Each structure stands twice: as structure tokens, then as C-alpha cells.
Image (tube, rainbow, N blue to C red; front, side, top):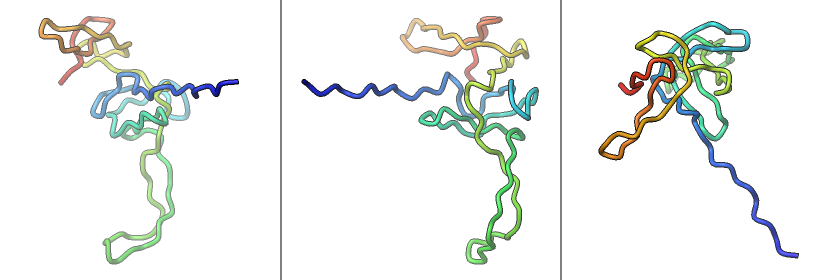
Length: 118
């Protein structure tokens, strides 16, 4: 019996990039909006500014000028729990793609059709 190749699903970012404005849809921070600080496509998580705040107990490290104590920082949120905000219509929207005449793709708002690129 031949061996089967394992099914490997390519990691995706669901179209969300660092710097995008998103709204948290579920969880303890539901309704908060913030900027995406980082995206982890392999774990399908995003880090959103002022949302998903966790506490970390850190040791002091004088050589790196780090004070010890309890530090609050943003933790990862599942990418499925955030919704992209359109800067033009200022509402949550799904993401669409449009191919430009020169062959490049750009992200567009499904609600109003405006581009989401900076």
C-alpha cells in the first residue's frame, strides 16, 4: 500500500495586514476597535492594540534595563474573531480583491468598493 502525502494547508492571513484597523467581534473585548500590531499566519492569530490584554510576570534584568513586576501587554486573538474596518465607510466589512490593469491585486471593501491599501 503506497504511503499518502500529508495534507498541508497553506497558512493564510485572511487578508488582514499589520496596520489595518479591525473590530473585535467576540470574547471579553467585543466591540473594541484597534490597529493590528502583528499577524501570525501559522497560528491564525492577530495582535490588536488595546485588545486581548494579558499580564506577564517578568524578572528584572539590569543589563537590558528591564524592570521586574507585572507587565500588561496585548495577547493574540484568533483571526476569525476580528472584522476589518473600512476607512472610507467607517464600518466593518468583508474583504474583496480587484485586479488592476497592470496585473497587480488590491484589497477592496465589499460594502463601498473603495480600496483598503494605504
